[in-house]
Image (cartoon, rainbow over all chains, first blue to last red; front, side):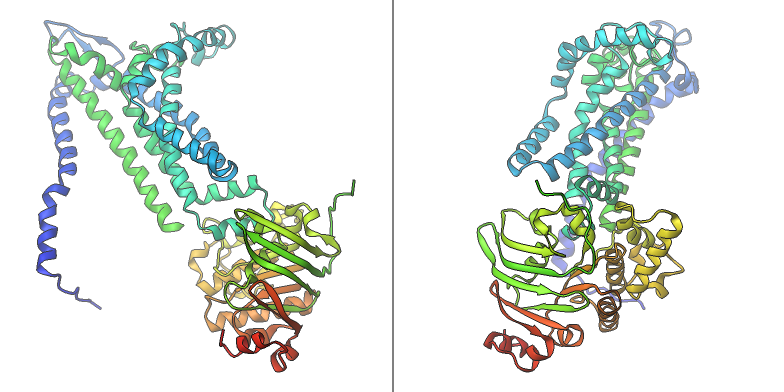
Length: 312
Length: 261
């Protein structure tokens, strides 16, 4: 049965139309970014072909683009690997933090912890970067040497560590940086579980551990969403990573050695890229890869979040 | 040192002795004494805020999760003080059903019912677990409606069916004591009737000690053997249902049964 919507008042309609240009600005900016990155990136793809995405070498040439080799693969792989390391480390920590804050800590400790995590989220990323250089990398360097001398037969630890600047260091630093984001998503969902489920679980004689696990299962879509949003953030982080990743054009096969990510590549190279024909276009292409990756993980993450809202 | 209780032998009588409960300084129960017999249904009645839910949640010690709670007096289950028992063990024997149907949305019908037995390791095999699940669903008068779709999620059930699923989940522990906090408050008459039948069946056939909080005198008259009336945290009347309904001794009971308070 088709139901007729009641006619809207004229002023409401006007108000609605008046908002459209403002509300659509953000969306237009994303479209515009996509357009610019595509337009500037395509020439590199046209000139070098798919090799620009699959080559592992980076040999710029100031005079002849034919002689230059630009391969984004180490950077793209580096971005993925550092972001995955970050998520794998940050997820259990965020879940523990959620349980600690929501279930175990007395309310004062809980408030202090929550605000501390908020401060973590708001800290300028360069602060994490210099902390990584000044503290994290130096204390990790001897550990990496130890790993290499004991587990060096494994490809993951087979390379020469260079003063603690490595894929793994970048991943660890990113983990610390994305904890607040995963925590925020998971904590909100956990807190939104109606009290009656808590009581139902407890009334069955579940211990705190058992019922926390059960409730975490209930908000699984939110946990996945948190992971995806955290991944998107880790993949796009620039300054902090550029400072600790080592910036070497290596495939991230050995995680205790230096590598590179797309964002650190762009940050490091863009300043002088205008001196090399087509190098800027290659970097734009990298930017496009990053944007698509970020949009995809954020989109999926938000999709999961709407699922948890429907269910709980 | 006293030996820790690891097991209770049903049937279990519940004795509430001079129970006082404060929540954040406010006295909710002001010295309530009452007992509930095995094989009988005791209806706990009284106007909103008289402490009925608090009474129930003190029996299985859920009340301890509320902020600022102080408990005095005692709850004795099967001769043992509830406060001297491991609360997780206590809740194995004292199950509870709540006002809102609350089956876990991410678990299937089967897994909801199997949850308690799995946690407490009550089934030695899949077959045994299947039997417990079937028994609980039958006792909750839900088996015929869900036996062909045990792997569906509860969202596919109606509200009344979800409440019977919540009942089945509680029953899967084969609890000698069952607490029900207004289980039919949000449920249609057909489902209400089934839940009432299930409750009577449990008391008569299983010898379960049933305490049910209800707002409707008709329901209390239909299913209960004893009625206890709470008013402002005190027990104002307690006796066999017929006597309380026909010859209430207290003015407050009379007014309450007439729907005046």
